[in-house]
Image 1 (cartoon, rainbow, N blue to C red):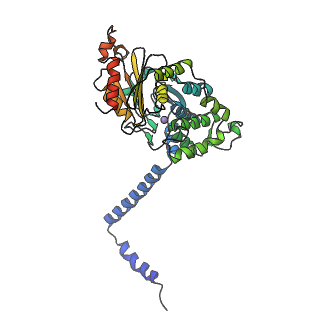
Image 2 (cartoon, protein in one colour; image 1 turned 120 degrees about the vertical axis):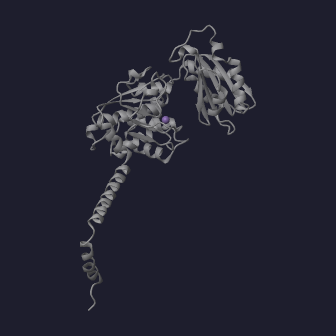
Image 3 (cartoon, rainbow, N blue to C red; image 1 turned 180 degrees about the horizontal axis):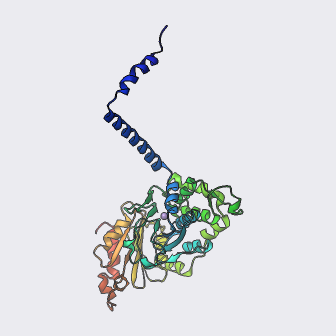
Length: 398
Ligand SMILES: [Mn+2]
């Protein structure tokens, strides 16, 4: 009869193994342990971001969620999402921003959802040293911003900013709100429908209807209603949030009243436009609501024959610029950078299709400056020169 080959194998191998060198045995044990630890680390690393973020939040007593200056609906939605998640793991949260909330869409978002934000000018006004950045990855826009070391960063913009403990920057996503919605989904949270109460929902974590509605609007606002720059994840997040969305609230946010000033600035921008070739520049002069400038630029870029446009205007001595381009020759961010290059107290930047810039007057600088009779001189550029440089820069001549 044939012997089972394995039996011979086993009895044949046990004896040499028993006589193995103890040093070699130690090496084998250490090797096996390293493999196990490696596998554990890999598993831990592969855990969903939402589960990791939840733990990082739960480790803190309180956090300050920081939005970018002049926050838009995506930033506000991501902030209330993070704050809501923090509250559900027992962590107190406040939400802060620098700059203004002036755009009618942004004001409607805050008012309709009844959101509580704190406006800050200085780093000392942040309620907690444990800062989570949403919708941007480097703190900016207030005195001392450079000294803020966020412990977590959640964003969809390119950049080098990182959190000390948690960094989740997904540049392929159309909105930061989609990332935050994903965190809720990762931990099995369920959106609470607008006509129900959280206690009726059978889940450890829930998303209040206002937060679901806000997050959906954040996605819609940043992706031009899912028509531009969005990923499959933005559609998935929208679908996930949809049971919790309150359509009446969504409608009130999406269709706010437009202030007379915004319409007037748009009219001024259109009537006062200067055209060279297919480029337009419009100086709308003094205004109080700087959010009207990008809206005017959005309007002008739709004019037939115009492929790139810059609108500028002045508030409290600071000149604000906003540019739009649908011209492949004109990278708007670089165009504005080039036009303001070398101009004192100026900064500019942006993407191919949209960009912005500012020329601050000296006394508006954090370190202060002498009050000036000759503001124009101190800026080193007159408005006529500025318009000329903008045209040259759009044409690639700077
Ligand atoms: Mn965004």
